[in-house]
Image 1 (cartoon, rainbow, N blue to C red):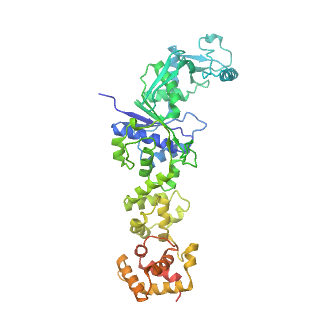
Image 2 (cartoon, helix red, strand yellow):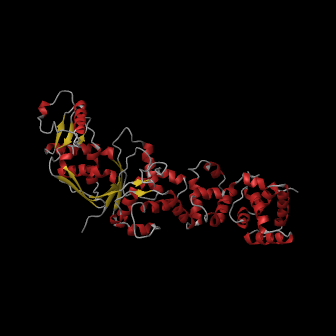
Image 3 (cartoon, rainbow, N blue to C red):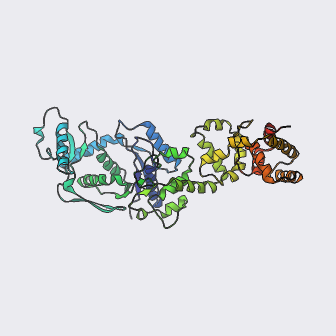
Length: 474
């Protein structure tokens, strides 16, 4: 019987949860869930100067919003420093590591000499075989791994294939700094081992780290987890992803009005393919996801594709869930607090009633909020310039007559208001379009809106008659 799958997502809390990190978390989550395993969350906060509480909260919040749940408690790497030091001392005692007393000046000179000679091994091993009794006074030593000088370090990567490094090009890694703090390389290996991680799935910018970490695994005689290094995400033009391409935090995508399910669906298809299928439910993703479907070349981020996919998810979403999502979005957009103050039983019921029409055209929740603006508008309505231009004296007079025609409608519904409007059009020898647009302007302050009879039904009798009165001339 094989061991249960254990993956891990291990972000550094030096900034928000960016889109590449979100995809890495998703791949780890899907792989663990597919095999009934666990995905663990480890915050790699060993860089004390750059790690912040705000960034940790942003990472946790981003994962929760994306609905990527982790198993067990969050593990904080820095809290495990004593265990990391213990392993470094164990390597030292076993002759697999040594104390290095090189000064900062000596190390700088070594690096410059190596680079001038075109060598990638920057440390010349000056303390590798020296007696510690020769150590100069006042120098706090680092502990370095006694890495193999010959042969090869090989990773059988599930995505990249067989990757080989010549050991003569790899340095003796620092495991413990002079101040006693463990390095990232050591901490990752010890944590993955202690957490029982079976599969490491991460960005291919960590591929060189895999070589160094394998040397630590070998020195400790621990078995290496399965390694999968997934290509990074590039912009549409093939260059490194920048903010203009979409290298934003997950919180920014929430503020831009994307649905978690749509973003998950978009991210899973960035670098992973499953035939021609583009739309996946969460259950379908779990069933279909495998590492063999992950390509080796960088995926290209495409905002237009994400928008279209988001539009699909909005159109197929349950109306009540969209109302709930809109309420949640108001905490993250500039005028959200103003709109939130206007949320009550009446406006929520109006939103729900309007949703079937509103969601047909919207590609984001922001567009949905904008299209629903007529529900929250204060009287008298603030007119868009195009709408204001239509309010001529003749139009205002027509609005006054329309109001009279609608005053007697009962009960008030899409069907009854449409009957009254069509009767008015026929009696006055007009075309419906000539009446609908002035009516739309008077009720919404805009030249575009959902269908005019839906607007009438959503706003209700009293509000409609009051808005028409504001714009009519007797």
